[in-house]
Every structure is written in C-alpha cells, then in structure tokens.
Amino acid sequence: MSTSDQDRHHRPPPSRNRQPPRSKVSKRVLLRVASVACGIQFGWALQLSLLTPYVQELGIPHAWASVIWLCGPLSGLFVQPLVGHSSDRCKSKYGRRRPFIVAGAAAIAVSVLVIGHAADIGWACGDREGKIKPRAIVAFVLGFWILDVANNMTQGPCRALLADLTENDNRRTRVANGYFSLFMAIGNILGYATGSYNGWYKVFPFTKTVACNVECANLKSAFYIDVVFIAITTILSITAAHETPLASSPSHQTHGQQSSGGGTDEAFLTEILGTFRYFPGSVWMILLVTALTWIGWFPFILFDTDWMGREIYGGEPNQ
Image (cartoon, rainbow, N blue to C red):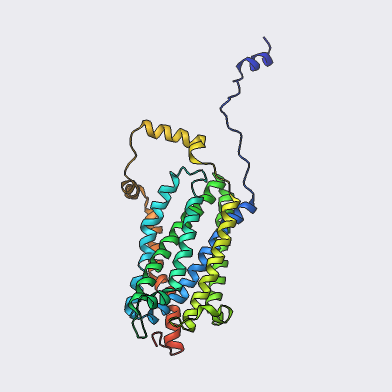
C-alpha cells in the first residue's frame, strides 16, 4: 500500500458536530456597542458636577452631603457582581447582556427625572418656602440612589458584551476597551460642558416653576438632555450586537450539562469571597494601590465644584 493510501485510511473522518468558525465582529460594531458608555458617563458627569451643591439647596447640611454618595461604592461592591452573576446565566431570547443594559438605561432615565423634579415633587407633597425641604430631599435621595445602582447595572454588562464579542482575541479586546474608554471621555466632556451652561432654562422655559428656581431649572433641563442622550446611545449599542441566547449556545449547553451532573453550584457570595484566597501578592498590591487612589480621588470629584463655589466665588448654596 502506498504512503498516500495509508494517509487516506488513517485520516480521521470530519466531525459533524464541529461548529464553523465565527467571523470576527467588525470594529464598527464594537464602536457602536461601546457608545453606551458615552451616555452613562454623560449623566455621571452631571451627577458629579451639579448634585453636591444642589442637595445643599434642598437643605441637607454640607457635612451630610457626602453620606448620600455612599450608594456609589456600595452599589459597586454588591450590584455589579450580582448583575454579572445573573447576566452570565440569563436565558433571555434577546441575549445575556442586552436585557440588563436596557433595564439599567431605563432606570437611569427614571432616576434623573426624579432628581430633576425633586423640588416639584416636594412642593406637590407639601413643601413650602424654607431652608429645609424634607419631601424634596426624600425624592432626591431616592432618585440619587437609584441612579447609582442603575449606573453600575449598565456598565458591567456592557463591558461583558464587548468581551463576549471579541472572545479570546486579545488584540480586539484591547481595541474594544479602548473604544469604551474613549466614549467615557467623550461623555465626561459633554456632561461637564452641559452642566456648566446656565442658560438651559431659557431653552426649556417650562422647567422653571414655583418650586424650581433658575438653578433647579438648569439642572432639570440638563437631565432632560441626559435622558435623550442615554436613549440614543443605548439604541445604538443594543441594535449593533447580535447575541446568541444562552440556551442555544453549544458551549454553554455543554457547560450546563457538566454543571448539572456535578451537583449544585457553590453559593454565589462564597464563590466570590473564596477567590481572594488564590490572589498572588502582585494582585493584592494592585488592589491596594487602586483603593488608595480612590480614597484620594473620590473626595476631589465630589466636592470640587462645591469648593469652587464657596471658596473662590464666595457663594452659599443654601441661599
């Protein structure tokens, strides 16, 4: 028998279960998916620049203003892992990530509208002229905390969706993360620029009411723009990506069969806390540097506009 005949006989038959290689997702698609970061960061910039002074206008003392911001770190600590855990196991026909992105964007829109109308809500519930508006404060804090939760609820699935689309291609993953960071920067620039303009109440004259003065009307108008912006970027993002539902994905079916045969999964929080045991020293050093960086950076971004208004321009937010 010749060598060619031997090769023919020993050649393994083609596998019928072999999946065809997936085509790479274009950079244009990655760009559109990452665009939702622009809408998220637009609202985040408005939140950072406008809300610390505004909450003092409602009557919350300066010393207590930072307590409201506790929801940001707390939601980042709990919401993002929970959302990530849930989205990994989501079996929606629309995919694993997009339902959470849409839900988070909708929650952002609702929360900023509640914040912008906090003074009007307080007035409708019985607040009148005075330094302290308790009902408006309740509405503001409720909207503020929902906004922080919604921001964390949207960012995590968006990053995970980019990772899903690039799969194991490290170069394209770096490109996708670069797009995400680019849109975050653009959103910051546009958000801070929008918050700095003090003539929005003239563009949207209906925002000025008995309970809402010029500063309140400007803030309300800026959040109206934020709602439009987050809606546009969310639509661009979710219509660009095509997700395979978890139940119909061959790789996930195999993983699901293996996990079901192996018994119940570990408790979620136990699984997360257990990973800390396996971190090498270099990872702990990175975590320490990150923590110290945020300890120094977060007070600055929370109180820079408040400090400028008080110390540089001699203003008083609650007058």
